[in-house]
Image (cartoon, rainbow, N blue to C red; front, side, top):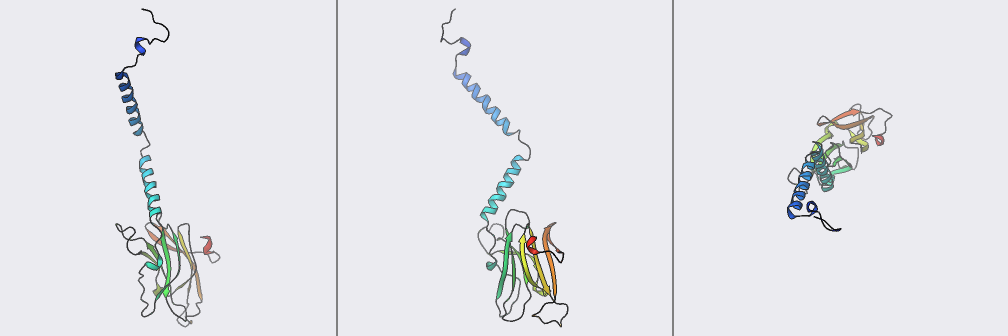
Length: 199
């Protein structure tokens, strides 16, 4: 048998069965490739995507919308300073608020609180929650030079060496830092020459 130019050889003729077999083989290769990824590739991608989505969806808590464990009697509570940052590394921002009871004279003690978003299941609803107390007003300290940077909270705490020191004029000055370690905020003193802005 002779074949002329342009005429297909018997083994090169395409049939429907041939194309079905090729498609099935390709599908098997693609499916197998999806199982040959590193074991943590899918988990890492999912975790990163979830963290990014959570950070984008959850704005930093509003310090003026929170309820603080401070009794000011007939006076109002003032939020005198606040800053935001991801303090625990979960991808969502926290707010650190410095509050004190309002007064026209003297220097009332400050409270420093860490705020998180509403409880689980209430995303976008409800007031921010106080999740940690870094400094309670009962400690009789006021805050100066407050900053949040690189996952740490730093402040200069002003206090009194004795009950005889007028409440207007603190005579003790301590630089301190709080950082999330081992599931809690750990406080440490900073060197006297340290600047809170560099934390």
